[in-house]
Image (cartoon, rainbow, N blue to C red; front, side):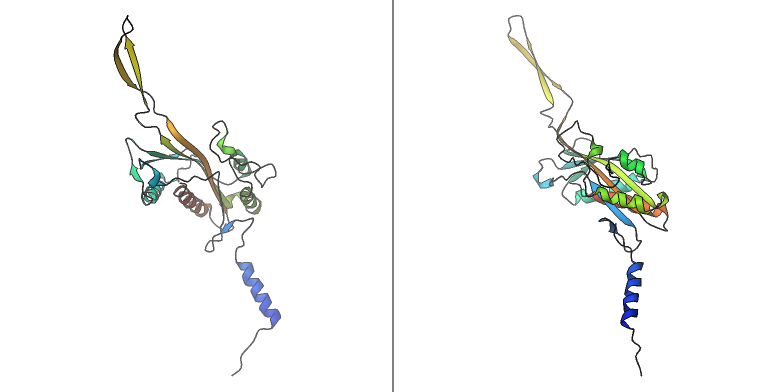
Amino acid sequence: MSRSRLSPRALILCVLLLAGCQPSARHGMVVDPETGLQFGSMVSGSLTLDSSLLKDRRLKIKLRNTSGDPAFDLSEFQKVLEEAYAAQGYEIVQEGDFGVLLDVNVVYSGQATQSMALEYGLLGAGGGLATGYYATGEAPGRDANTAIGAVSGAGIGAILGSYVTDETFAAVSMISVAIPRSKKEARESDIYFNESRRRIKEQERRVLRQYRYKYDMQAAVYAGGGNVDQSDIAEAVRKRLYRIAANIM
């Protein structure tokens, strides 16, 4: 009984052919081994907030979709976030008072194009690398659209240069985490005197509660792939954005 053996040249050729069938990452992108989709994501900053450090752990989650994409299922998004943050020790509340507010607004959901990338600060002057990085959250006069990291900007440039528009998708959201001032801090007193300047009464009135602390971030997810439906890419992008928002603090 004889065994057939591949020559070294044939073996190398087989290895190269197999390697060519596997999707390769471009510019630091993440490849889904099952679909071959190239994924990228970027967040303008990082926030460390632990529920054990908070006196009031009641968390209110507010979701908005101003992108105009009707396929964005906010009820599913809400469920993902509530389960994730409940597991972190937060008490999820729907109405009434709260100790922390998580506000997520999906501002773009659609094809990844040069114009949308520039509009939301995902590309810099070079067409691939972003030029600015703003993540302190301490300069309210700055535009959150400029908040992006230089290295991450190469990713969406790779997608725009590698796939046709119908094979790309992107979602951008603005995320705010805020802690309100206490009710005691949101009260003011008016003191009344008579003609002899004797104090006669003190009347308390409520004023608009402001935030003691507010941090704004931008999160973007984008993907591209060949020979796939855009609906499949869009769903994968939305799921990835869900996971990012569920771990933003």
